[in-house]
Length: 415
Image 1 (cartoon, one colour):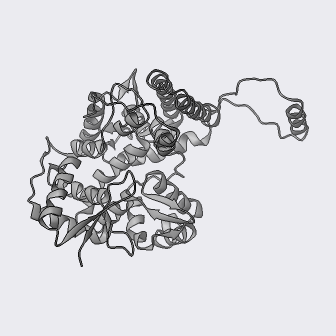
Image 2 (cartoon, helix red, strand yellow):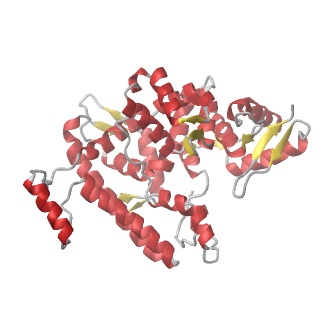
Image 3 (cartoon, rainbow, N blue to C red):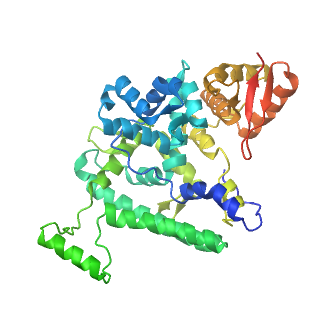
């Protein structure tokens, strides 16, 4: 459930803003951009399964390895696009000249090595897709039922979809003006939203740009282009980006079991899809007919965004458990000994390369998804309480390594 009784900090400093700037941009508008028509969401898991031992690795070598192991991605633009989407989903990150697995990425690598991975992948990918692309995915899920599964209706659906997204950006603007009191943070957020709106209106929907007075240099450049026959033709037709935005996500929604294609070639919500929409609506995601994900509690408190509601850490994991479980999930009840064995099971695949330590959040993802497959919800609070007991009772086997500021640190097993 989203939290409503938030505690506010003092006015954030410039350093605090710099620390959370990327997270603010992400949460203002959760979308991952161009997807290079990569329709199969679970293929990203197969890519990580086949390449996880390479990391850290240069992007060029990673792309060549993807082309080698995945013939369907042998075209350079699809192999490169796969790396781009994995990065946008928070599974990969760039560190200097090399690509590395994130906490999500290391958890995924560990999950792909389990015999029950096929049963768990929906839990993992629904979570990461909603975190990174939830504003797009939820609004498309709301519009998709009863529309055609063919390409002929993509234009009409796409125009309706992007009108919803423009409504979402308007909602966000109102929230920023109302809830953000720090002037320069408000200005930065509004500028980001304005650029996103311009991109949709002029680069995707291809609306004519507002007329303005051209400088002498611009008028001469336009005249030369016109004489050379290169003047840009203004048209009301949307660009191909519209279709390329919708088509992959329609495939993802099918893969995730949220919609199905009927014999009449139309989309229909599955029980999982209905449950997802019902849950996020009950949590206050829909405003004026538009789906928008509230700010996280962490961001709202750090940047003094005085919103009425915020989503807690690991909200999307709890949401995935609610969506895919038949009935309410039971509480995690494994013994401390069983919990320790789960940590030991995932540790070799999650640990950092050439180091005897694994990120504590990545281990949580693995253990909590394994619990979800047993119909249990393992909260982060329970995880840390269990971890504390393990460190106290089995200090001869396992110990904790401190992380940098803002990180939860690492777990290590004694050799």
